[in-house]
Length: 260
Image 1 (cartoon, rainbow, N blue to C red):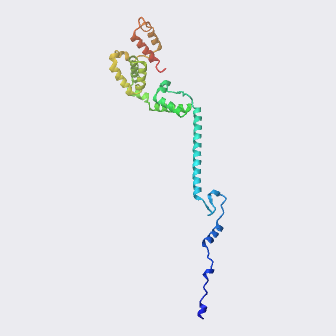
Image 2: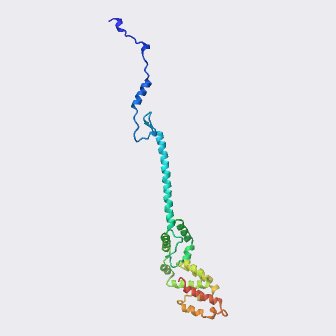
Image 3: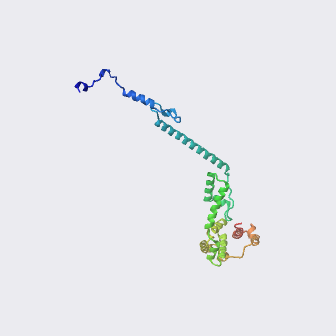
């Protein structure tokens, strides 16, 4: 084979047309860009790249969540306010103190610290009368459960426990005003330790109020006995009135009708 056959003809550089690789790539991209899906709004679709505008979509979603969350809070507050207004409308202007223990008056319940607090609490929360009474009952049930057992306390004082308490009550009626007597009996005359304390108090003060003889237990006091004392001129006649005798008669009367 000759050398001439081995030499290939070289192309003319001037006759070769340059190829633009960028244009070919762009032509191919336009042909392969997918169409916008129906569930993607135009504002979130990049038509040039055929992709979802992720940043815009996330920002829009965040704004939507803030808007919906704010509306939800407004709705919740509105419902709460409506329920509160309904509760206030159903609440009574004043609460009745019913079903109190026999030894508790309405005035005592109302004026006590716990009574004032419970009333204010019920008004602030628009409680109904039934809810108010339920709280009152629960409180006194608890108090009653904590109170000493009268039979057990008298048993601690011996066979004459009731007579000892009667002697104390008669002494208190003479020595103190009715309100003070009632308070001492209610607070201290309910258990053996309190009764023994009152006996000590009575012993320490008997010289100032007379001999112990007048404070010993007597027969059951009757209204006839009290009326008989009231007929004495020392009680009703201003010309013969004896203050000490008047005090004694009034004490008998208060003792007879205490708790009624």
